[in-house]
Amino acid sequence: MTTRREITLHEEDDGWWSAVDEETGVASQGPNRQAALSNLDEALSVTAAAEADQTKPPEPDAPWFDEHR
Image (tube, rainbow, N blue to C red; front, side):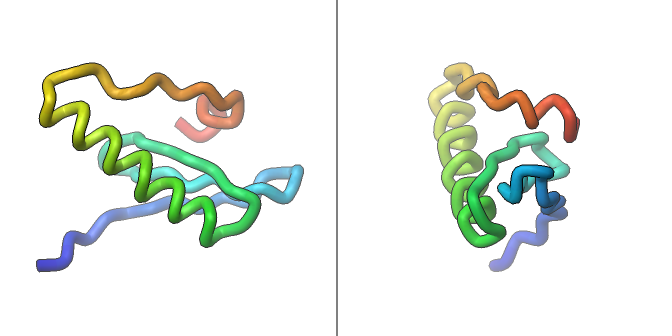
């Protein structure tokens, strides 16, 4: 079964890319689109594992994150 997700990709002024899962608000970044999406997959996995363990997911530590909320 395939899950559809709405992902926003944005190229930053410094050339890096941010990727945000609109449903969960989980975000990541990378030096190119593919890396940003790959990092987002990892961030979503870590968040899902934290939710399954009933622990708090990691807090965002990137200044660009608040700009895209």
